[in-house]
Image (cartoon, rainbow, N blue to C red):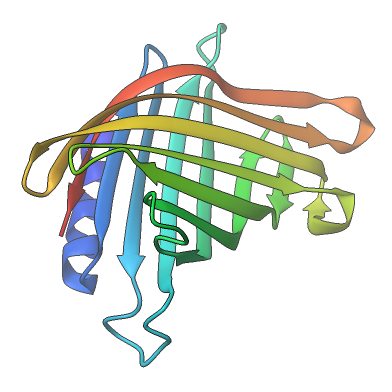
Length: 190
């Protein structure tokens, strides 16, 4: 299943002219994400970068129950807002999961930041939150935070270590933590 998912994401991103493919793992979680750079396909402002982001996370909890979380979103990044290599951005994504016989759908607002230390190392972080008004079906709130330290090993390839926390809250009090741990992975840019 993991290889089919990774292969289909890679094939679809190559055909669509994507900007990047990210794969990260830890002991019980696999996450695959693809960024599609929209500035090449649409006549948009040259001062900002527009991305379509597609992601899928699969994890097994302590009882070996498999949980999945799928996302699709849009973000705008203002590159190099100062001379120190700092860029920030805003976005929105849709989050869907169907577990515990409940359907979770949310539209969190997102904040992105990147700091380029030099041409070999950069740090990026993002935070997304959906309050009750942006949570639908059985969802009450959604929160995720992620940070990565990236190191360039190839002309278009990076390895990274990071940490993330993803939490969904359902109506009637049940919660699900998808991942609250560190991970390693790689990024390939096209």
